Image 1 (spheres, rainbow, N blue to C red):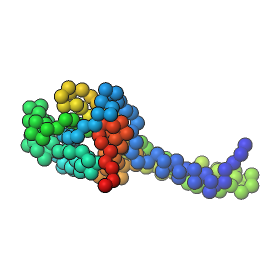
Image 2 (cartoon, rainbow, N blue to C red):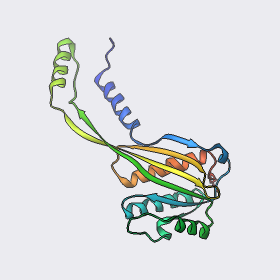
Image 3 (cartoon, rainbow, N blue to C red):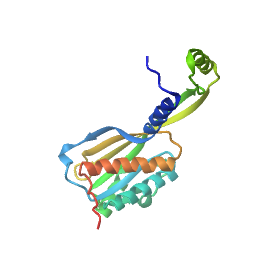
Image 4 (tube, one colour):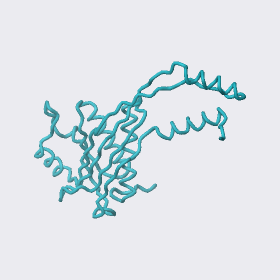
Length: 206
């Protein structure tokens, strides 16, 4: 049986950890009817249990859409927030008419998972007994547990005229160390895929 040197093993482990961190779209649904028909003006709605998080997410999304060449407006900036944070359909329609939105994008947290990871100490391999001794110490050393948080967000894009679902994606974020960083990564992943499917324009350099 071929054994990897410790340094090689550590490199592979570190690479695996890095490659599994960040945000990726793990599920996606695309309505082919709307591919190649980019929208130009989007109302952004974030659903959250805290108003400040909703405002922050919507403002970031609006800024990134505008940077990509799409007009956008934050629902939190234009609609008075009721105590229960739930928007009325009539209020949403009024904003859509006011800003001539042709699409509405809605994002919410689908799930938050805490995964407990047990980590053992490092080991060295020198000769058969050295290997045995180091592995024995490795297996019997007291490990430590850490928590890895995985957040899944669902984002849907709807056509205003027909209210049909144009695009839907589920994002998965590993190693969540900052809510703001996660927001940026999710927004980037969504915009990139919408551009890929030509549902929003790709801004060309001037």
